[in-house]
Length: 117
Image 1: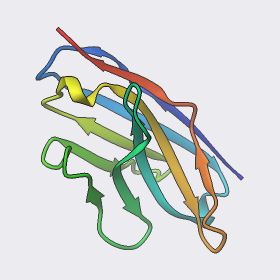
Image 2: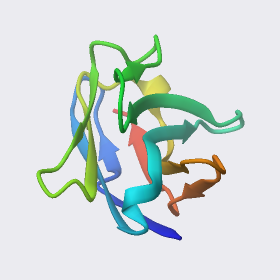
Image 3: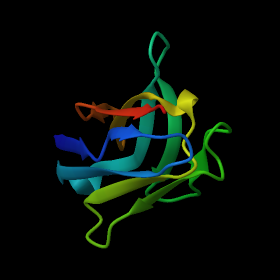
C-alpha cells in the first residue's frame, strides 16, 4: 500500500505562484508513476502532470510552461511548482501513485487551490 499526503494549497492572486508537495510512504518500490491531477469546480478530474519511474515527464497543454513537476532528493516527495496562475487553475489538486503490474491507483486527500483577485 501507498499513503499520499498533499500540502501547499491556498488562495493566490492571478499571476502568482504556489508550490504543492506530496509526501508518499509505503511500498514506494512498486510505484510505476507519480502524477498530479485536479478537479475544477463542477468539472471532471483531469490530468495535470505525470512523472513515470522511467520515461519522460508529461504536462497537460493547459499548464505546460507554467507548471513544473519534480521529485525530492529522498524520492518520497513530489512537488508541483505552479507559476503564472490563472483563474481557470482553481481546483482541488490530487497526488496520484500508480502501481506496477496491477496499475492500481492510490490518491491523496486533495488540496484546494483558489486563484482569485
